[in-house]
Length: 149
Image (cartoon, rainbow, N blue to C red):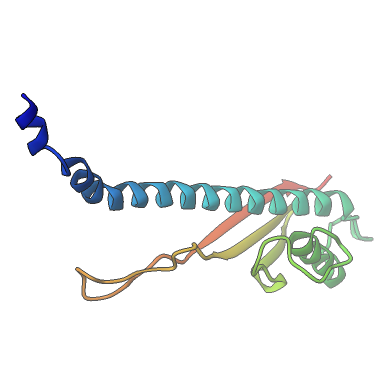
């Protein structure tokens, strides 16, 4: 009996060494998915709040129709990117720019759409077994529409 356990020494470390890369891959995948979900949730919040603000700020023109001015668009883009209509020095999400925000008015509905280039911590999977590297950068798009109040 003693001799049998003596033959098993070192097997656990070999098994651990084989399974460690899979466990690390699973751990980093879960962390990255959580980070991506958090970023998308923040993007949704920014587009929703910007749309809500715009829908309450638009006023009817003399013709009885709503109109969207360049000043309104600028305010909403600042609100979506910096979290303030006055603008700011740092964006709410890293790398978010006012050029990535689209504002439109169709009939009595306003729409704010934000396209955010999400960059994961590991941006490329090297192509060890493939011919090309796999690019992991994606564009997260959040769009929110609301009737003008």
